[in-house]
Length: 198
Image (cartoon, rainbow, N blue to C red):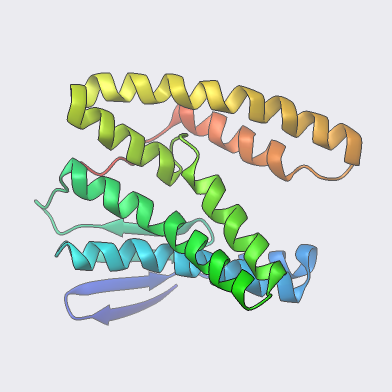
């Protein structure tokens, strides 16, 4: 693991990010793997950019194959409205990049960017759409009720995804991406650690 210091923020880069790039290049091809990695990085940098815009600079950033883990300075909290803005910044960046890619006739990058943005907008925790939805309901009816509402909505979206992912696997014999994503999200809902920043 490499560690950098940028002002008062520690940045840790885990070797698994390079393993992920190698995996993506192996199974999706080098070109698509690089496109996806760039799209993911732009997504995460959009979250960070919004945090700095809101003057909520992190004290620790961990970059790994699982994405970015961002930690605020001890004692700092995010308002629910800020949570919504930060959560939505990532997928909206992907949609913006997708639109720009279409203008320059880069269909492959546009597809990857749109897919990443749309998936993260789904109202399922721990995806950005689910976190934004939970922050919104927390504003309306309190944190505990928001947690329960978001859990139910996540399940309502996950069950069709699981079924469709299983059908895709049966029909294609080798396309298990949607099923794997659905299973991961289902496991998160059952044994999750609370990643909600509030």
